[in-house]
Length: 333
Image 1 (cartoon, one colour):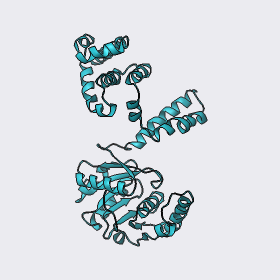
Image 2 (cartoon, one colour):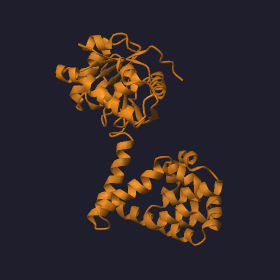
Image 3 (cartoon, one colour):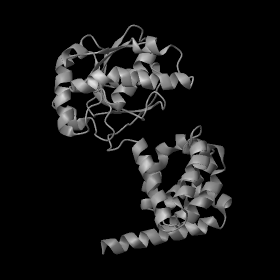
Image 4 (cartoon, one colour):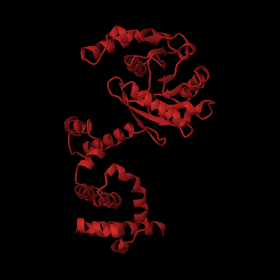
């Protein structure tokens, strides 16, 4: 665990996200310098933060008094004073590339060279606003789930040039302030949570638009079903607990044009692997299927084992692969 005792951090931007981060850091015992170019927003910051802390106290979510936590949050009149002697910066200004470029030039100039510079951006990859910085190796995205003092997930998304030590320090820092950091291994717009959320929302809208259920009932599906399950057990953990063959059968029902996952889950089942651990082999599986003709399945030792387990389902997989091959051939004609 990273030692954060008596450490100082800077929060840049005193809006909703900035105030929420200030609570996270001050609650963890850090001294917090908060800055905003809007003097009105900065002057209103402590009062609004106090209100949030009082709500948290009423809900029994604070280990210390509101006054003690609030005493660790200091208003900085200038960006330079906010950045003085800090070891970590959390930026929370408006979501444009131009704004990020401008503020990160200043943060790189004003902060100690050892400080980690993190942005709360919800969709911009780090590389879009740090490429030309002398200190680009210490920059990354630390995207919170709003509000971070209640929902602890933080997506750590570095640029290709971010120093591995910076990534490690950021992950350990977020863990030390009682957040749950996850690493986005490759840059992607929207990171992880927003993309998963978007996929679920898209299907919800499709089901509603096509008349399968009311919006109220679809909300219930999440609130009283998947939401409760996924709050303590993720999709991969759920798969690991259940029989993979059942998932194969479900996949055959809903994804008849995609034999790759079916094949892979079958391999997982036969080898007794955990799904998550086996994902590293998924790309190899795709390559095998891309060049596999139906008759080749007969001589594949793994598929021979799978055939005995799946029985008639193997015929369906063979047919799917054959159809897929025919489609690809037609595309190339």
